[in-house]
Amino acid sequence: MSIGRLRVRIGAGLAVIHGERATLNWLRPLAPQFFGDGPPGHLVADSASTRVVRFPWQVPDGASAYFKFYRPKGTWRRVADCFRPAKAVTEARNLRALAALGLPAPDVLAWGELRVGGRWLRGSFLITQELPETRSLADLLQESARSGEWPDPRFLRRGIPALAALTARLHASGWRAMDLHFRNVLVDLAARERGEARFHVIDLPRAYRRRGAGGVHDLGVRFDLMCLDKHADLSFSRRDRLRFFVHYRREVGEREGDRRLLKLVDRMKRQWLAKRDRKLAETTRARKVSRRRGGES
Image 1 (tube, one colour):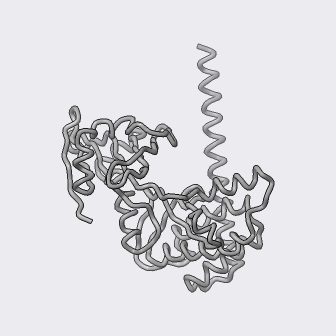
Image 2 (cartoon, helix red, strand yellow):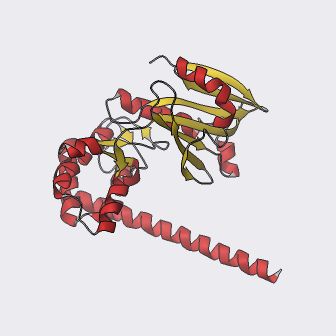
Image 3 (cartoon, helix red, strand yellow):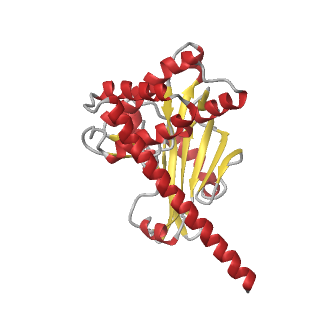
């Protein structure tokens, strides 16, 4: 795929957009709105740092696409962004690298960033092709929980080894996702109807690559396994969780025993949850103090 570059002046900033030639020609007149609220479409998520919109894509075949806009958040992050690639640029690079390795990931259609004075980042965006007939693993499990039905045993029988194999391939190629939650793992529904299990990984702005598999004593590997197990602990039995680690260990040739591997991940999960609870408590106390001072004044 031939990638071109487009430079567009937007106010006091300069936007640099990358994508296929046909895509850039379509984006040129629309560039200002891609660094704001995004194209008109269905709003999927909107927070202080990220906005996601699903919209009809015009190039090449009228399918849908996802637009993700990253806003700079916090003073120190704005300063740090002066010396590192924007989030959308990093995520585009990661997704294209995974696709080149044959790992299932969405196609990247375009990405860009807007900077003022060549340094100050005002925002960055990423456009990816929608993966048809897919749903996140988190949504499927929540749907099963609401209906009171346990996840399909046949799907679990094929899905647990398939998810373990995908995670092992990711780690064996040197990649650490650092955000491998169930919401970022998409299930291929068409394959599921055929009795197969196929997954895709999305949302990889924090992913990085290092040489060598690293093993479970690698912090990134354990963090990925912890992210998966954190949700599996709520939806699956301990036996199913152990099956995942058995298949993962076989795929990567890990020397640690299955139960030992599960204990390592459990320890990291407890540490992560304790840290999260401390932050939540600190935030709650700070809000109470702020409200008390506001009431006194």
